[in-house]
Length: 127
Image (tube, rainbow, N blue to C red):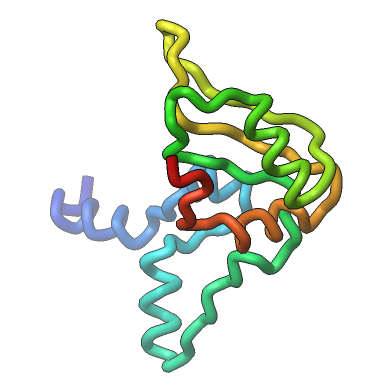
């Protein structure tokens, strides 16, 4: 051994290459979001946020429903005001009570967006 321990460690630091993570290998993305944000900030560019309605939706999630609302009532409302439905699923807890959340699937693309625009943050039935 003709090198000191400090010299061996210093030489290994420069020789060592970090292997990309499994996620980076699968996705082909080796930079972290923080690194990309810092690079974008340093370059003075600002990326625009994607629009929420860029693509027409055919599914919506309805929340804050009263516990006495059933699937038939949800189907009637959206079928009569928006358009034909593929499926309505009301979520229940382990005791069988409604959680007040329903997934509504429409047959046509864009009907979900239409329903969202019409009913988002609105009281449907005042009773």
